[in-house]
Image 1 (tube, one colour):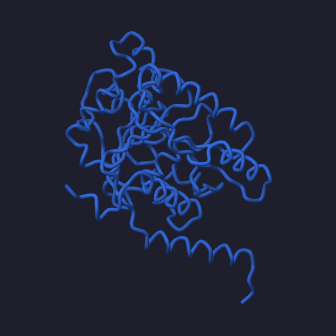
Image 2 (tube, rainbow, N blue to C red):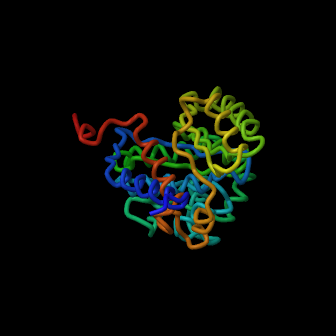
Image 3 (cartoon, rainbow, N blue to C red):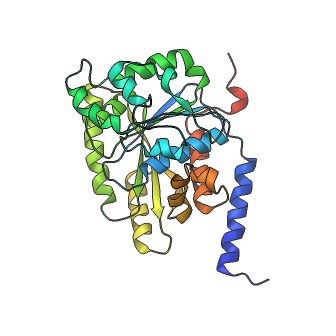
Length: 297
């Protein structure tokens, strides 16, 4: 049999899938709350949120995705209702609704939940400016939720809008860890430095515990020198935070949301789905004890 590039790629993909199937993913002792943010649009922020959540749920974790983007793209990808008037994150921020009263189970898989967003959320930004405790409303609601449900939920992912308004400030105030998807294209580090400056200000006054824990390289094109250069630059500046897993440019990743699915549900064997599962497993292994030890004491 001729060893063609395509045959080599397929063989490599099969090996990676085999490793994922054999992998035992640890569960965290306490709920890890990730804020997924980047000021730049089109970097794969929402795609990263829903696919990491789905990958962790597939590995046995219970995961909540909080959709803070008025476009509701994370809600769409997870297949939950988010029409105008449907209860969701707006009701939590503005009306003080409890998260467990308005969150929905994603039909994609067991253990995956979503607090949805719709266009109502676009008005929340201006309403919050006049509200008491406007920067901490999400944290208050999430703390109350985790005080009751915390041991049952292993991860929370907060998908931010591509701006630095009060919705994003609420997310940064509520989170424990910052996860930044970085597109392997021009100006990637420039956007990153701007975001980190804002995060530093929020941390200084509102959430000193928030830390940058994870950077994920997205839209990587192995055929271009630019992608390799950007990846190298990011790893040089953030060697500990940058995951080894890299998300490739993929038609399947782009197609999946139009079917109300993550790419892991849409085409689990595709390179993009495998890469996101690898990233999810790597994320889980950071800061978690092995599963067989997690029930001690």
